[in-house]
Image 1 (cartoon, one colour):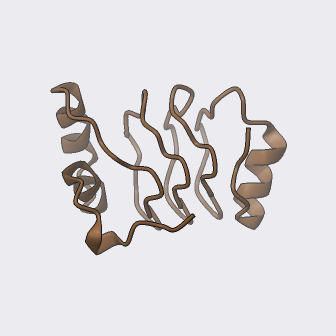
Image 2 (spheres, one colour):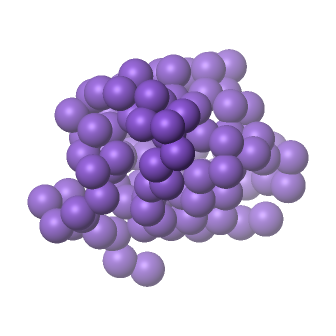
Length: 113
């Protein structure tokens, strides 16, 4: 599973997140835009406040990303990695076990349901 190179992902909503414009991303989603975020690289970003309902983050890389307070319970995280991420107050899909989350957080393994 290859990550989409940062400079080659044409999705304008992905670009907003790379630029730290979470509020603009959320506004565009509310207007009906649908992002293509599978296999993307979110390394080191601050994504606090991100609205994730219905987004497919399969295969994404969240190493050292600030995910505090995000509700991923209605998003897809199959194959994503959260190594070293800040996850205080983060809600994960119910299908993900605490062990899967811990292994990914500490060792960078890809989360499986």
